[in-house]
Structures are given as C-alpha cells and as structure tokens.
Length: 151
Image (tube, rainbow, N blue to C red; front, side, top):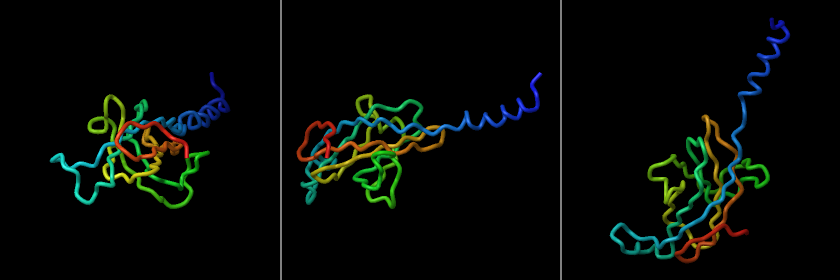
C-alpha cells in the first residue's frame, strides 16, 4: 500500500517528468545556389544580381514544423535564445511535401543577395519550439553547391 506521502510525491514528480524542453537542433546544412530564373527559363529582368538558395538539412525525428531565420543577428550563438527584436526574416516551413529536396528537409529561397547568407533553424515538437540552432553561413557568389563557412 502506498502512503499518502508516496502518492503526493508521485503526483509532484509527474509534471517534472512529462515537461521537457525541445532539444536545440544540431543544424548542419548545405546550400545549392542557382541563377534567379523566371518560370519561362529567362533571367528575371532587373534581378540578375540575385540568386536562388536552396538550404537543405537532415529531417529531425518527430518534427511538426520548422522555422528558418535568414540573416538574423538577434540570436545568441551560445544559447539559441532571441536577444531583442527580429532583425532578419523568419520562414515557416511545413514538414514534408514541397519542403523535401532529394530526401532532405529544405527551403527554397528565391531572390537571395550575393554575399554572406546566415541561417538559424528551430524545430517544433509536441507543439513547442526549440531554441534556435547555431548559424550556418554560406558565401553566395555564383551558382554551385556550398557547405557552411565560418564568418
């Protein structure tokens, strides 16, 4: 027979066991860069200086969604927490479907500027967002395939 104290202790421990923060993603991305073409196959007039960046990463188990933050400098690299107002652009990304590229989760971003493009990722699991990942940086200059490059 469980004592009153034992029952009380088990009731207090249940929330501690079931409430767990979502782990910060280990974001290791690659990028493919293409010219910024119109659907017709022609370069978009006036946007020849822009490129299309396809950022790909390994899908995260049990992910319900992702957010990718482009050129965000308000995120702590140590903790993944936000420091102040968003200073980049956050893209919501659904799991699967059009957001899969060659078996990996991805985001296609047309109109990316040449130069350093920095990305942070966070994942939603069980309705809760993780902290932001460490950044992945790609020095976008010409079409091709790129790995992360330290700033």
